[in-house]
Amino acid sequence: MFTIITGAQFGDEGKGKIVDMMASQYDIVARFQGGDNAGHTVVAEGKTYKLHLIPSGVLFDARLLIGPGTVMNPGILMEEIAMLSDNGVEVSPSKLGIDAKTSIIMPYHVALDGLREQKRAVKIGTTNRGIGFAYVDKVGREEIQMADIADKSRFMRKIEEIAPQKEAAIKEMGGEPKIARSEIDAYLEIGKKLKPYITDVSKEINKALKDGRKVLAEGAQGTHLDIIHGTQKFVTSSSTIAGSACAGLGVGPTKVNEVIGVIKAYITRVGEGPLPTEQKNEVGEHLREKGGEFGTTTGRPRRCGWFDMPLARKAINLNGYTSMALTKLDVLSGLKSIKLCLGYELEGKNIDYMPELSDDVSRCKPIYIDIPGWREDITDTESFVDLPENARLYVELLEELMGADIGYISVGPGRKQTFMK
Ligand code: GDP
Ligand code: IMO
Ligand code: MG
Image (cartoon, rainbow, N blue to C red):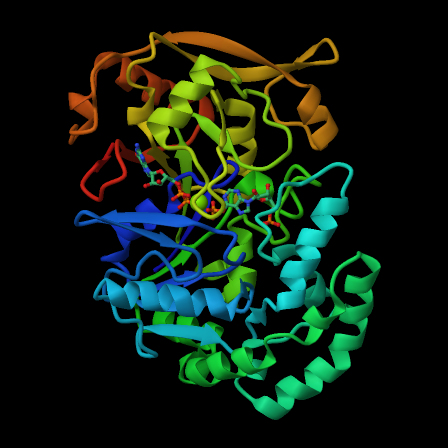
């Protein structure tokens, strides 16, 4: 059984919570793209875990894998392993495997990310974690891989090969060229510690599937941040959609059984780029405050707006969702009326699907319908029938207009605050 979970909007849909909720039923949970730009929150037994690299199944017995499609900052991984250990969760090599080919984020990637963003006339608002430049080196065939930092002579050979052009690039952007050769000893030290974790992720997963075991692929970021299909240039540097799980983990598409899209009952975005239903007013404030909409990785306030159906329709096509998990329905409680964006007006025409180009998306004027809200706190609700009538109507309308089944509804950050529709 192979299940893929991705975010259907611009990230932070609650993927961490949904993966944690499902993880007890899986033998393996694997990350297939992105890096520590991700911030996945798991709230369990009164504790909050903010995970950047370690898959959100960590609190269960599942084997965890970091696939070769990801980019990994080893220092951040070590911090995360230590944080979990402080909380009584040991992440040993029998628990976590890292693919030998996982791209390593080097100090020069982080430096270049910061320098480039500073110089951009039109900013992206990156997380400043070096993600884009690490993927540039993967595509440019100049990456340093997990296996390299675990082997001193390989690592030194690669640094000698790569450092001169990194020095030149950093210098050209007004940075400190010494960064290109910094932290070498620290990386080797961590490489030594991580060596026992090295594995062949594709081999492990394919064997598990052949043996009838269950594998869950955990997406990072969200559909509209996809490097190929997203709102370029305001995107991340990896492919975030379900198909990327097959490529990133080395599993054939014929093996996929289920694709679950995590989607908020409204929408948020952190960083720059078009967001047609954004509410820069008291509604946006309500969503931000009640939903705790501040970046898990950067702490930045998230931009908030109404649910956007044209974006959801495109996400359903791009991912081929077999069902959806609707999160943060509780955040809408207390709003007198709720707007739902059915389509857009663009150049005098009405459209019901997200246009291809970012420039067009940013010119779209949302067409809304008003739906009566509900006052009741729903955070203790345990079943669909117990929701207030207007909340039920809202969920049913979303389902009908998306043309996709909502399998789970989440009404709070906690594990128990989820029920099946
Ligand atoms: P991810 O990146 O998709 O894993 O999402 P984040 O963890 O960055 O952001 C989601 C935030 O919403 C986290 O703080 C979660 O604890 C919280 N959360 C998840 N589901 C719900 C929900 O149904 N209701 C509320 N109020 N909070 C939720
Ligand atoms: P999770 O997995 C929300 C955004 C950044 C920026 C753009 C590019 O927690 O949902 P990058 O550092 O990746 O080059 O930044 O992508 N971004 C996210 N937004 N959730 C995330 O991850 C994100 N990861 C990157 O804010 O706009
Ligand atoms: Mg997040």
